Length: 516
Image (cartoon, rainbow, N blue to C red; front, top):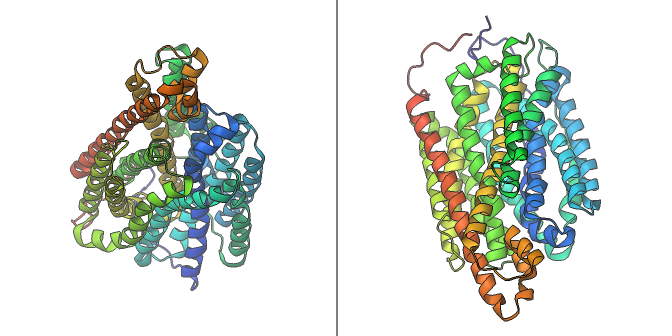
């Protein structure tokens, strides 16, 4: 029987005096990863025009990074635990830099998807290593605050990506959003080598390649079915086959891990309420966040006509509020309890998604800003205690597994969010467009129905009817956003109810930790 309690008496540990400097270097590496999740959202119109990408290809360009990232996080965390977390971080930064160069040179959607996938592989080694090293170098009494800082940078990095991409696209081609990552990655490598210590799991458990393969293929199949469903049909053989593969492989993954003597992720960890509920709330939060970034930036550019930089600037309220709120979440949770802060933050975020669901072509920016601020307030409050609960529920030697699971929930939630919310927006757009394009050339009609970007690119072929067609497309895309944003709000509300009913309040006397 494995004792899963994180509260066993620790052995004497000496923590580095320069741990604050280490934290800033790790946060810099983390921001590099998170920036790449969001940076292409602003570049979507440029990529669509330059590479003639369809709506489905655009979703894959964004999602391929998050999907490979999510699929490799657990094995990457296990590799870091066994061979050294600093070494995993350095290897990830190197792969990330090489893939960024390749993305810069891509001249087709398929090439860009491939290089984005490789960037995701590098990122999978970077992100869990940063959090597990934070857990290793800070003593327990300082760890919550350090994790809160880490979580704040993780969230704010999304807006940094949007803004930096907007600045670059004002003067350079879309490939510049990749190229800028290279010198930053090189600088991070030098700083990590000079300052960051290494650590590893003293038990040196064996790796689990079979479990890793099943989890990766299962996740890819799941997201493939969600993304391709609107295009191929939800009852098509391809879509149903993908879902069947996902169900079989993810179920087999759980059974394999239960029986393995060296599991990559022991499913019994989910018997720890703080671990399972932390995973749930982080997944739900990033389901909404990634989907929101994907569609709201398109709304600002395609529907309201803002340029790349102007769209990035309009997303700034999210990042600024998050940076202010996240570091203050830990002391609030210490006073009110984790449960109250997580539930309150989740409902604030849900309210923000409800507000964004009201967006129409002529909606004032104040409405967009209000939605972003509410989401940022909620995310800033919920993420630090949820992250601390998940990571802190496991023994310190399993920091790599805990941090990898934290990151996996983010990326799985984000990848599924882009897929589901993107699909809902796409279906809503096509349905609301109705008969607007009736009588057009079949090829033009296909492009225009595929996406709002395709409609704008072909609008001139409608002659005198172009203004009417563009206005109809803008309204249709807004209808799709309403469906997507309110789905995110409903998902967060359900998660908040689960936390309110099941999460143990950190300020209340706790029952004996679970033993499995």
